[in-house]
Image 1 (cartoon, rainbow, N blue to C red):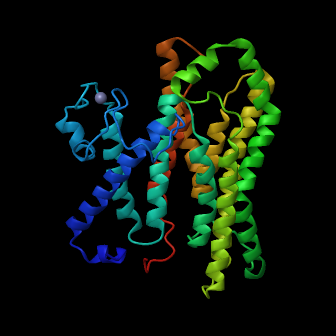
Image 2 (image 1 turned 30 degrees about the vertical axis):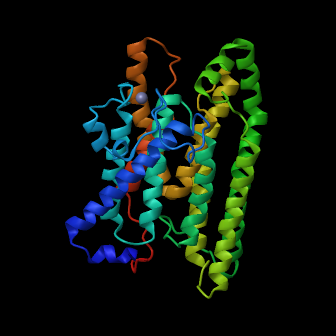
Length: 369
Ligand SMILES: [Zn+2]
């Protein structure tokens, strides 16, 4: 079925399809939330109960409904299923519908759906593990820079003076380099702060850190990404630049000034959002010798900044800081502990989603697919 046929369907039926799609994606996002921080494959093995490892059948995998029918317990071991499963599914069903109402049928829709799904995944993982996996933020950043350029999404903040003659090379260059940029930034941070923190942590808890990491199934505090992830991130940027080249070779106009606008806005948004947090991290580390903002927060902010562009990045930072301060103060007051770790990525995910939904749609091709 061609996707634009969705426009001809009765309203309630189209809504139903969109919500069902959101629920199904939510079910997949739950797999990501459970497996990515534990460094497990998201493809194999098939879904199984995390407590008794019994493989799950089709009737156990229906979003929300299965949870209700099973009254929140595993069919074989009766272990309670975390409430997170139906919450994530229901949330994405709702968000898919809201984004569709806002965007209509055009190239912004699948991008925005992917973005809100990534925000839900990152927010939930950060809440549970205080961790924002590179496996999501690296490709997320590259896609946030490259896709709006490829699909010529209008910039929220048009940059004047981009002439099409060199806008083409600029677009290709920035998209192709995006993977290298985020990895270079990671290396610089590792040399300046990361390895000092690593040494500090090893000195403080020589065995503790390693033990909890093994229990989690994750390799603990990873300061440098795995080589395979680095290579695929770099390859993704180059591949997106290649697609831009193919699009032009096939006679489409792009990448023209609209693509250049989108890619420049993405880079400025990422540099501003990520840069501001990075300065904060440097300042705290040098003045107080503590890690105020984790580097995962900075990579996530680079991804969010690239996707939302400069103006919406500013809004996101304000909303996230307000949320984090209020809830952080409540946590500190309740636990009487100033050193409690605040899941900043969780607040960032909420703020970015809210900013995306209240901001103007980036729709560039109202003609649809
Ligand atoms: Zn079970």
